[in-house]
Length: 152
Length: 152
DNA sequence: GTACCTGCAAACTGTTTGCAAATGA
DNA sequence: TCATTTGCAAACAGTTTGCAGGTAC
Image 1 (cartoon, rainbow over the protein chains, first blue to last red):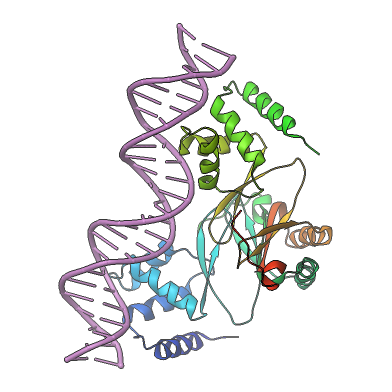
Image 2: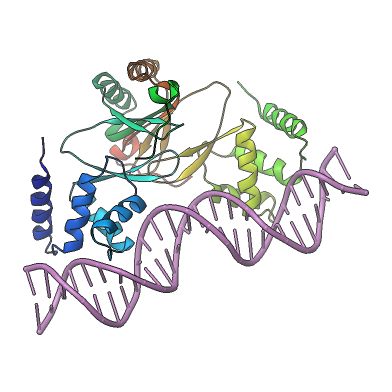
């Protein structure tokens, strides 16, 4: 379990190692990113950051997210509809996604058996697998029950 | 097993049903698409089509591929690196992809056990799965053996 | 003081569309 | 004939970058 402070320490360390600088903007962006719900795109994130620090530009959010990705604190995810979202990356954790095509809800899951089979398939093809992605698309339980979902 | 003629018949039928028109360009694009290797992007396809019919515009290729997709003859695939490729779609066939991050080679595979587990996971989450995607990334056997691959 | 960072605006990439001229049925 | 299609060029959306002024260290 990682506490928010860990992320700041980790980021500060990365910044130091690379000879970069810790700025107000970068701190704010990291803070807002951590506080956000797990899957967020740049535009939304920029909007949220502006609530805290209204002068921050889109390019800074963009560049900071690249930085957080390099630092191993964030992960860029491109989904099938072409949208790119960022999500916090916990060390050595892996999961896949289940996406509701009606309300857009994204649920995470992990399944050890599938992982094992994936490795096996790769091996059978003489392939050295480094990573993978799997997304299941369909209708979530909420939508099936007729409940609406408000964008959150 | 479908022969090239089947695709033309199928396309001609779709065109007729929709009250559209069978043009030289559409025929050429379909022909080149079928003859191409299985995963091709619009730019490459446009280049190939121009070899056969030099006046065809990019927009026509774009619109024709949308049409072929609607007709069920092609399938649009967005991969993790953000690139969109088209591939021929055989009726009720499903497969996933293994992508070499070194040479770009794309191999197809299918695995019944994984499919079953995917359905099971979805079910456990109260999710009605309509489709899914799975991609394994890594280094292919050719690259591991040190062989180069020429763009083909 | 200096190298790094920021915000802006503009460049870029890939996708999509409006339009006038051309064409298939 | 006449609605559909085409090629062009331009609009678009999302991403990326150059630069002049500002800031962390």
